[in-house]
Image (cartoon, rainbow, N blue to C red; front, side, top):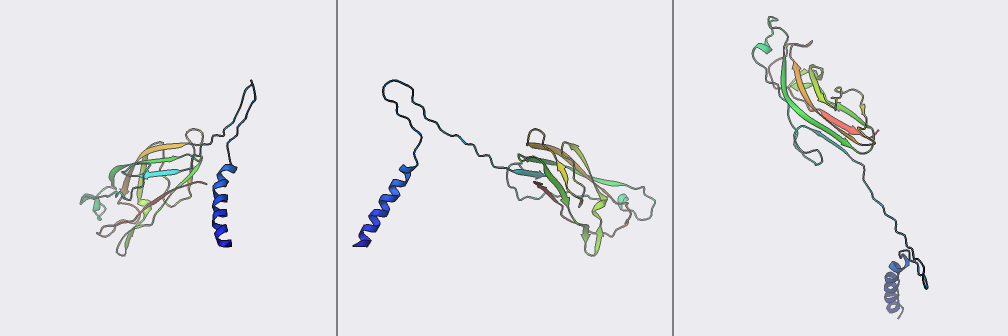
Length: 187
């Protein structure tokens, strides 16, 4: 018999709970003014969005672009008769957006390798045109400050170049690769 009462009692309590939290109301008898208040709230989540290469800024894209330097025979000369040259690569569009105030921006990567051979990442230079400077490879993060209020909306075009005739030249034939990770994080 107790089980039969328990279920209807629990159901009655569950149905009564929404009535306990009711909106403000005021009843005025006769003439007068009735007032009722309502709280409004807008919740804006904080975000950081970073795009390096092709793709849309406010989306998740799994494609990783590649900057490739295809050297000419003259640029690979090892006899010292060819002047120091650089090979340039295509421009890469970049953008950083955030609504949380300052953001720390950095890049990390290892030397480019082909089998046992390597080319130091310091032989890659990056020129920046726009409002987002390229962070120094594997150095301490730099602060990117808001463009207005707590909003960051910066973009640039980064153009990469490779100096083949650097301190460790010459290097053996091969396809040297590495991956650079760019990180934007709240301090």
